Length: 65
Image 1 (cartoon, rainbow, N blue to C red):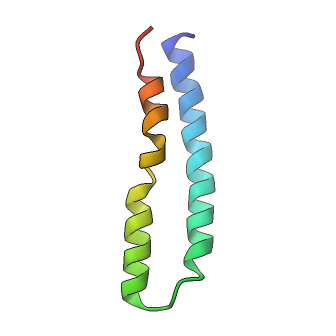
Image 2: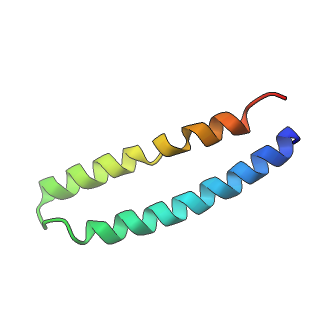
């Protein structure tokens, strides 16, 4: 598979993942207690964590032949 096609497939997969991730995190965010500390911890963690599941995909996208 050419590097260009791998990067295109990876880009589409990342966009799809982020759309689903944002919807799920925002929906679950309505269920946490309404206190600034809980909201800060929740959105701080999940706002940082989104990249971790994408590491294998990014590694695959940038792999040489």
